[in-house]
Length: 468
Image 1: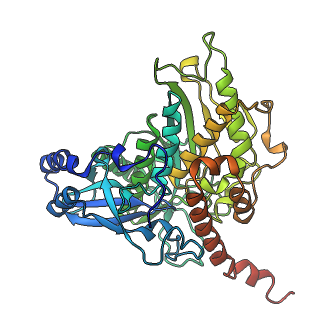
Image 2 (image 1 turned 120 degrees about the vertical axis):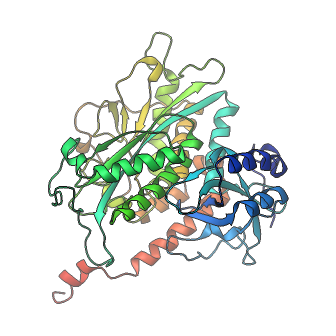
Image 3 (image 1 turned 135 degrees about the vertical axis):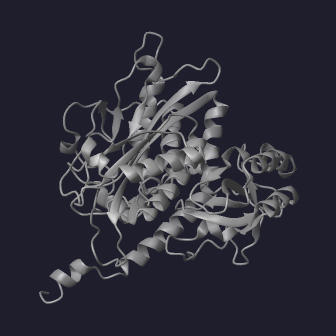
């Protein structure tokens, strides 16, 4: 089935398959790569694709024969396919062509055979980009900015937990044993000795990230037991979404080599803080390279205020894009290091939207709402598109606050069910991201929700079995 070609996103705008083998072939030869993993991120940020011998990969790029079923963009986290989207993803499940992005190729650490990762976009048989694919959704948002002469800059901060191996899903997760031979039992935010408990794992993560060319910056110990946070250097949103995608995989693989699990689940343990993916963001003028969030006198610009207004008004309506799972909403609780509303304020971490201390050139807003479990392409796209709409519509923000934002009313949904109802009817964002994306994403999340709601929890057996 032919799809409508999204504005600014066509095969003609991408490097032709015939143009790519030279660059890719030279890189593969230089790095003595024997196998290539061609990766396509799905709606949940799960990496799907194919592993090919390097020679076969290059011939497939040249001939345009790297194919993958279009249904990869409609699979749920449990490996099923939702109903009701046959008009978008036909039951015949035709192939799409994977077109690798040469800028994403990098060494894949940890394999016995020299392997490379490369991230690909998908195109249908008519040469149209699959516009509802998460990576294309982010590209579409970046094109909106480019059309206005703007260039967004972001810097993600990703939190995760190390936990003991757990093969029984009914058994709660536990912190792992550190170098001292003991697990952490109390909060150790920014604790250096606590960080040293996992020095071998951390060093291994840094080494593998360096081998893969990921621009990670500092790593700290967060508030939870064996909870870590890594900061990425600021830069292009698409490149950083690619890096976060690969970072998650590298961290999980390293953890397994050290006989522990690494999890990006938003709330893996009931008695510990959740894990977030905070997104710092600013916007530059492409013409002069200046930050449009600051005026010439160094004060906040009108664009900055309108950007914040767009975030405050629209992010609660597209929550599933940055809190995509039933577990995501367990993280958003009062006084839990996670926001419950979209209040904003200067250097105020109780707010969902924080303005860090900075000079005029580095003025930015930190979106503290996304969970670490979110698809990085969609979480970043949701934030940028809401800010874009705010600037285009010249929205006015609510008054900034000082003090505890947890005392203010909750404006974020309490559950995935409520969030999906809001998401489906968010017309301003839907108009820019497309009906197909909204319908497929909603169907996937609704299917996952129904799957979850069919499970009888241990809490129900514990408290209701013999009492009701």
